[in-house]
Every structure is written in C-alpha cells, then in structure tokens.
Image 1 (cartoon, protein in one colour):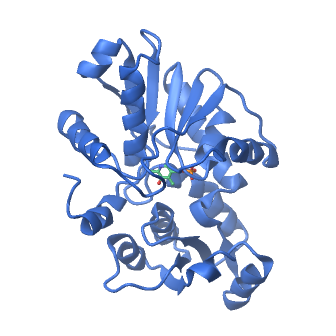
Image 2 (cartoon, rainbow, N blue to C red):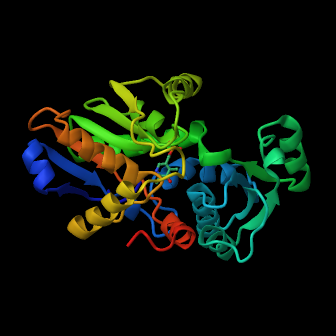
Length: 303
Ligand SMILES: *Cc1c(COP(=O)(O)O)cnc(C)c1O
C-alpha cells in the first residue's frame, strides 16, 4: 500500500488534563475525499478482488442512511465499476442526502420491502441477484467479509508504525473493523464502543476472527454502555457533546458511531477508568456524510 498515513493529532482540554491522560485521534475521516473512514479499508481488497475476477458490477445492501452504501457508490465511481444498492424499505422522494449522493456517484438503487430485505443473505435471493446482474460481485450489508478484515489489518499495521498507544478505541457496528485491528495490533489493548444495543458483539467478533483464519494478537473488549438507545438512536447529551467537541477541537464527529465512542471515552476519563499518563488513541472511522440526512430528519441539531 502506497499512501501517506493520515495524521494522529493530540487532543488536549480540561478533561484530558484533569484525568492526566494523553488522548490522540487518528484522522481516518480524512483518508479519502469520498470513500472515507473505515469503509475505505473495508472496500479496498473487495474492489481489487472484483476487478481481478473481471466483475463489472458491485452489489451491496443497506438502509437509507448507510455509510456503507455511500462509500460503495463512491468506490465504484472512483474505480469505474457499476454499483447497485439494494435499499431496505420504500423509496421516499426526494431522496435523502446519502441516497442522492449514491445516485450521483452512479449507483443504481433498488428498494425492497423490509420483509424481503431480511432474506438478503439467503441463497435464493443471492441467486436472483446473480441472475439479474450476471457478472456481479456481492458485498454483504455493512461490508464485513474476510477481505474487509484484511484491509482493516493494514490500518492496524499503519497505526503501529506511526506510534505507540496503551489503548486504541473505535466504534463498532458489525465488528468487521475491530476484527482487523485485533488481528494486527500487537502492542496495545483495543476497546470497542458498540453503537448497537445488546451483548452479542463479542461472540460475533470472536467468530469473525476465527472464520477468517485470523488470531487475536492483543487484549480487547467491547463496551456496551454508550449506545444511547441503540443503532441510529440518540439523546440530547450526545448531540451536545458532538457540538461542543467540534467547537473546542474543530473535529466533526458523527451521531451514529464516532460521537458515541468519543462520548464514552470522555465519560470513562471522568470516571478515572484510564490509568494516569495512559496514551489513548481514538480512531475517527468517518461517517460524517450521515450528518446532513440526520439534520434534515431532526432539525439541524448538529451544528
Ligand atoms: C460502518 C462504520 C462503523 C462500524 O464498522 P464495523 O466494521 O461495521 O464495525 C464505525 N464507524 C463508522 C463511522 C462507520 O461508518
């Protein structure tokens, strides 16, 4: 991989000072103008694989606000592969920012009912898609597969070459990104913040690591205390935190993933959960594209 690593910036404020920790942020939201964040790494080898198989179409799945849909459409445009997005639920006009951007990148959208969407992993549904688009490469919802984990392992290696940290934090959805980091980081603990409600992720991540013939190289855990009601749910204190963080540090966090992670880090700092002088890295996994649609829906609450 030939790229200039994204910067790691230190975050200093009254909270980091009084907790006596060194907090850093890996600016992966700046890694690519459109694909952005962890989705860049998750798609990297999938696109290469589709190209080496001479596929002419990428098909994937997602909800109407999905960062993965947006990123796949952007990646298809920049690698000149046609993209098809299978979207959960009915078409709502005008399209929201995420879906309109996907269309602008050239993605063809197919809306299916929520019932039908539940069958998206079944052989019959996938056969149907392969029949309709006869030379397509199918990427699962959220983009998590073994090639995605391979890509995220490169992110882990890059971080280890850049600097040393005691704890590396990131937000977790399907667990694909953290699986790659757990399989590549050797000199730090990894702390994942779940954006979803429930305690199923640890098992799922263990399975992902095992099924892709990887090994956990470092201690890791999932914190489930900062989901704010569940996936795509939020609370006023989260929004206030995101707005203050931007004001103070000039870094935009998103309300679905990175804002919840950073809120969690600040809360753990205040509770004294990190040891004194610990070096803590937060990975900014992107997701900023979602703010436009979020604000349209909830009335411009993110400044
Ligand atoms: C998709 C996404 C995640 C979750 O990544 P997983 O690999 O599904 O765990 C985290 N942060 C952002 C900003 C995302 O878009």
